[in-house]
Amino acid sequence: MPFQRPASVPIGQVWSRFKGKERDGKPAKMYQIRDMDDAKEKCLELMKSTFLRDEPLCDVLEINRDPVSIETIMKNWEEYVAQNVSLACYTEVDGEPDELVGFNIVLVKSIDDIDEDLDTVKGESWKKLLRTLIEAENLCNVFKYYGVDKYLTSSGLTVLPEHRGQNIGARLFAAREPLGNALGIEATATVFTATTSQVLAAKCGYETLAELKYSDMLKFGINLTECTTDRAKLMGTRFKKQQ
Image (cartoon, rainbow, N blue to C red; front, side, top):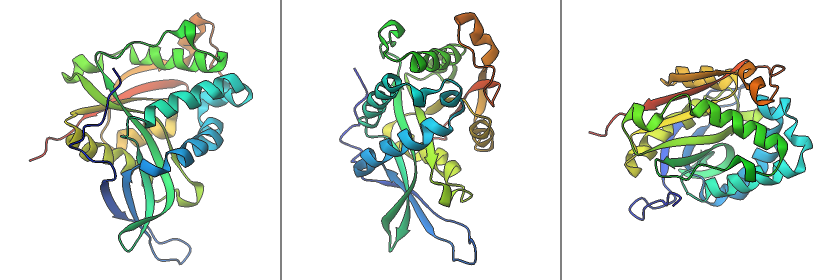
Protein backbone atom coordinates (compact mmCIF):
# COMPACT_ATOMS: atom_id res chain seq x y z
CA MET A 1 0.00 0.00 0.00
CA PRO A 2 1.44 3.42 -0.95
CA PHE A 3 2.68 5.56 1.91
CA GLN A 4 0.16 7.91 3.45
CA ARG A 5 1.25 10.92 5.44
CA PRO A 6 0.05 10.51 9.03
CA ALA A 7 -2.47 12.96 10.44
CA SER A 8 0.01 13.68 13.24
CA VAL A 9 2.14 15.57 10.69
CA PRO A 10 -0.30 18.11 9.24
CA ILE A 11 0.26 19.41 5.71
CA GLY A 12 1.38 22.99 5.24
CA GLN A 13 4.48 23.05 7.42
CA VAL A 14 7.57 25.17 6.85
CA TRP A 15 10.71 23.04 7.17
CA SER A 16 13.37 25.71 6.88
CA ARG A 17 14.00 29.41 6.27
CA PHE A 18 17.18 31.01 4.95
CA LYS A 19 18.55 34.23 3.56
CA GLY A 20 19.85 34.23 0.00
CA LYS A 21 22.67 36.22 -1.52
CA GLU A 22 22.75 39.76 -2.86
CA ARG A 23 22.63 39.85 -6.65
CA ASP A 24 23.13 42.67 -9.16
CA GLY A 25 23.00 45.24 -6.41
CA LYS A 26 19.65 43.97 -5.18
CA PRO A 27 19.25 43.00 -1.51
CA ALA A 28 19.24 39.35 -0.54
CA LYS A 29 15.83 37.67 -0.47
CA MET A 30 14.42 35.51 2.28
CA TYR A 31 13.36 32.01 1.30
CA GLN A 32 11.32 29.28 2.93
CA ILE A 33 11.03 25.57 2.16
CA ARG A 34 7.65 24.08 2.92
CA ASP A 35 5.29 21.31 1.91
CA MET A 36 4.46 21.49 -1.80
CA ASP A 37 0.76 21.41 -0.99
CA ASP A 38 -1.22 23.74 -3.30
CA ALA A 39 1.67 24.15 -5.76
CA LYS A 40 1.54 20.55 -7.01
CA GLU A 41 0.00 21.28 -10.40
CA LYS A 42 2.38 24.15 -11.13
CA CYS A 43 5.39 22.07 -10.06
CA LEU A 44 4.40 19.19 -12.32
CA GLU A 45 4.05 21.52 -15.29
CA LEU A 46 7.51 22.93 -14.57
CA MET A 47 8.90 19.40 -14.36
CA LYS A 48 7.43 18.72 -17.77
CA SER A 49 8.81 21.90 -19.34
CA THR A 50 12.24 22.08 -17.64
CA PHE A 51 13.29 18.79 -16.01
CA LEU A 52 12.47 16.61 -19.03
CA ARG A 53 14.47 19.02 -21.17
CA ASP A 54 17.51 19.41 -18.89
CA GLU A 55 17.96 16.01 -17.24
CA PRO A 56 20.79 14.10 -19.04
CA LEU A 57 19.06 10.73 -19.46
CA CYS A 58 15.81 12.35 -20.58
CA ASP A 59 17.86 14.24 -23.15
CA VAL A 60 19.83 11.30 -24.54
CA LEU A 61 16.69 9.12 -24.68
CA GLU A 62 14.74 11.97 -26.33
CA ILE A 63 11.83 11.60 -23.96
CA ASN A 64 10.46 14.98 -25.05
CA ARG A 65 9.81 13.39 -28.44
CA ASP A 66 7.88 10.47 -26.95
CA PRO A 67 4.37 11.62 -25.95
CA VAL A 68 3.48 8.21 -24.52
CA SER A 69 6.49 8.33 -22.21
CA ILE A 70 5.65 11.88 -21.15
CA GLU A 71 2.09 10.84 -20.28
CA THR A 72 3.36 7.90 -18.22
CA ILE A 73 5.92 10.02 -16.38
CA MET A 74 3.32 12.66 -15.55
CA LYS A 75 1.02 10.00 -14.09
CA ASN A 76 3.90 8.65 -11.99
CA TRP A 77 4.74 12.12 -10.70
CA GLU A 78 1.09 12.73 -9.82
CA GLU A 79 1.16 9.56 -7.71
CA TYR A 80 4.38 10.64 -6.03
CA VAL A 81 3.19 14.11 -5.03
CA ALA A 82 -0.07 12.56 -3.77
CA GLN A 83 1.99 11.20 -0.84
CA ASN A 84 2.13 14.83 0.36
CA VAL A 85 5.82 14.79 1.27
CA SER A 86 7.25 16.78 -1.67
CA LEU A 87 8.98 20.07 -0.96
CA ALA A 88 8.72 23.54 -2.50
CA CYS A 89 10.89 26.63 -2.07
CA TYR A 90 9.39 30.11 -2.12
CA THR A 91 10.61 33.62 -1.65
CA GLU A 92 9.29 34.89 1.66
CA VAL A 93 7.61 38.22 2.38
CA ASP A 94 6.57 39.08 5.94
CA GLY A 95 6.89 35.42 6.91
CA GLU A 96 4.55 34.21 4.15
CA PRO A 97 5.34 32.34 0.90
CA ASP A 98 5.42 34.55 -2.17
CA GLU A 99 7.04 33.30 -5.40
CA LEU A 100 7.63 29.63 -6.17
CA VAL A 101 11.31 29.30 -7.12
CA GLY A 102 12.17 25.61 -6.80
CA PHE A 103 10.95 22.21 -5.66
CA ASN A 104 11.85 18.59 -5.08
CA ILE A 105 9.48 15.69 -5.76
CA VAL A 106 10.03 13.62 -2.63
CA LEU A 107 8.39 10.30 -1.85
CA VAL A 108 8.60 7.52 0.68
CA LYS A 109 9.84 4.13 -0.45
CA SER A 110 8.72 1.25 1.78
CA ILE A 111 10.16 -2.25 2.05
CA ASP A 112 6.79 -3.81 1.19
CA ASP A 113 6.20 -1.70 -1.95
CA ILE A 114 5.32 -3.80 -4.98
CA ASP A 115 8.03 -3.72 -7.66
CA GLU A 116 6.97 -2.08 -10.90
CA ASP A 117 6.41 -4.50 -13.79
CA LEU A 118 8.48 -3.11 -16.65
CA ASP A 119 6.48 -5.14 -19.17
CA THR A 120 3.41 -3.05 -18.37
CA VAL A 121 5.15 0.35 -18.56
CA LYS A 122 4.00 2.48 -21.49
CA GLY A 123 6.49 4.54 -23.47
CA GLU A 124 9.70 3.00 -24.77
CA SER A 125 11.93 5.92 -23.77
CA TRP A 126 10.60 6.00 -20.22
CA LYS A 127 10.89 2.22 -19.96
CA LYS A 128 14.61 2.48 -20.81
CA LEU A 129 15.17 5.25 -18.26
CA LEU A 130 13.22 3.39 -15.59
CA ARG A 131 15.20 0.20 -16.26
CA THR A 132 18.40 2.20 -15.74
CA LEU A 133 17.19 3.61 -12.42
CA ILE A 134 16.11 0.16 -11.24
CA GLU A 135 19.47 -1.36 -12.17
CA ALA A 136 21.24 1.34 -10.15
CA GLU A 137 18.94 0.86 -7.15
CA ASN A 138 19.44 -2.89 -7.21
CA LEU A 139 23.21 -2.49 -6.71
CA CYS A 140 22.64 -1.73 -3.01
CA ASN A 141 19.83 -2.77 -0.69
CA VAL A 142 19.17 0.58 0.99
CA PHE A 143 16.77 -0.96 3.51
CA LYS A 144 19.41 -3.41 4.69
CA TYR A 145 22.28 -0.91 4.51
CA TYR A 146 20.58 1.62 6.77
CA GLY A 147 18.56 -0.94 8.74
CA VAL A 148 15.20 0.68 7.93
CA ASP A 149 11.85 -0.36 6.53
CA LYS A 150 11.30 2.90 4.64
CA TYR A 151 13.32 5.87 3.43
CA LEU A 152 12.88 9.14 1.58
CA THR A 153 13.80 9.26 -2.08
CA SER A 154 13.09 11.67 -4.90
CA SER A 155 12.20 11.91 -8.57
CA GLY A 156 13.51 15.25 -9.72
CA LEU A 157 14.62 18.62 -8.40
CA THR A 158 14.21 21.92 -10.21
CA VAL A 159 15.29 25.48 -9.42
CA LEU A 160 14.10 28.28 -11.67
CA PRO A 161 17.01 29.87 -13.60
CA GLU A 162 16.66 33.34 -12.10
CA HIS A 163 17.13 31.92 -8.59
CA ARG A 164 20.03 29.57 -9.29
CA GLY A 165 23.20 30.33 -7.35
CA GLN A 166 21.22 30.85 -4.12
CA ASN A 167 22.04 27.36 -2.76
CA ILE A 168 18.39 26.36 -3.07
CA GLY A 169 19.17 22.83 -4.28
CA ALA A 170 21.30 22.16 -1.20
CA ARG A 171 18.62 23.64 1.05
CA LEU A 172 16.01 21.36 -0.49
CA PHE A 173 18.28 18.38 0.19
CA ALA A 174 18.76 19.54 3.79
CA ALA A 175 15.01 19.96 4.31
CA ARG A 176 14.56 16.20 3.92
CA GLU A 177 16.05 15.78 7.40
CA PRO A 178 13.42 17.67 9.45
CA LEU A 179 10.74 16.19 7.19
CA GLY A 180 12.09 12.69 7.79
CA ASN A 181 12.35 13.27 11.53
CA ALA A 182 8.73 14.40 11.65
CA LEU A 183 7.63 11.31 9.71
CA GLY A 184 9.76 8.92 11.74
CA ILE A 185 11.97 8.14 8.75
CA GLU A 186 15.68 7.71 9.44
CA ALA A 187 17.36 7.83 6.01
CA THR A 188 17.22 9.06 2.45
CA ALA A 189 18.67 7.67 -0.78
CA THR A 190 18.34 8.69 -4.42
CA VAL A 191 19.77 7.68 -7.78
CA PHE A 192 21.45 10.82 -9.09
CA THR A 193 21.86 10.75 -12.87
CA ALA A 194 23.74 14.03 -13.52
CA THR A 195 27.20 15.12 -12.43
CA THR A 196 25.85 18.39 -11.01
CA SER A 197 23.39 16.64 -8.70
CA GLN A 198 26.00 14.04 -7.69
CA VAL A 199 28.46 16.76 -6.71
CA LEU A 200 25.77 18.65 -4.82
CA ALA A 201 24.67 15.54 -2.94
CA ALA A 202 28.27 14.83 -1.91
CA LYS A 203 28.63 18.39 -0.62
CA CYS A 204 25.45 17.85 1.39
CA GLY A 205 26.94 14.81 3.13
CA TYR A 206 25.51 12.02 0.98
CA GLU A 207 27.68 8.93 0.61
CA THR A 208 27.95 6.92 -2.60
CA LEU A 209 26.30 3.55 -2.09
CA ALA A 210 26.73 2.25 -5.65
CA GLU A 211 27.64 3.38 -9.15
CA LEU A 212 26.23 2.25 -12.49
CA LYS A 213 28.25 3.02 -15.61
CA TYR A 214 25.88 3.94 -18.41
CA SER A 215 27.93 1.78 -20.77
CA ASP A 216 26.78 -1.23 -18.70
CA MET A 217 23.24 -0.67 -19.96
CA LEU A 218 24.28 -1.72 -23.47
CA LYS A 219 23.75 -5.36 -22.44
CA PHE A 220 20.05 -4.50 -22.05
CA GLY A 221 19.95 -2.82 -25.45
CA ILE A 222 19.95 0.66 -23.89
CA ASN A 223 22.54 3.02 -25.38
CA LEU A 224 23.36 5.88 -23.02
CA THR A 225 26.95 6.35 -24.15
CA GLU A 226 26.27 9.83 -25.55
CA CYS A 227 25.04 11.08 -22.18
CA THR A 228 26.96 14.06 -20.79
CA THR A 229 27.40 12.10 -17.53
CA ASP A 230 29.02 8.65 -17.70
CA ARG A 231 27.34 7.02 -14.73
CA ALA A 232 24.50 7.09 -12.23
CA LYS A 233 25.21 7.13 -8.51
CA LEU A 234 22.97 5.79 -5.78
CA MET A 235 23.70 8.12 -2.87
CA GLY A 236 22.23 8.35 0.59
CA THR A 237 22.59 9.48 4.17
CA ARG A 238 21.22 8.65 7.58
CA PHE A 239 19.46 11.51 9.33
CA LYS A 240 20.65 12.76 12.68
CA LYS A 241 18.22 11.86 15.40
CA GLN A 242 16.34 14.71 17.01
CA GLN A 243 17.46 15.47 20.52
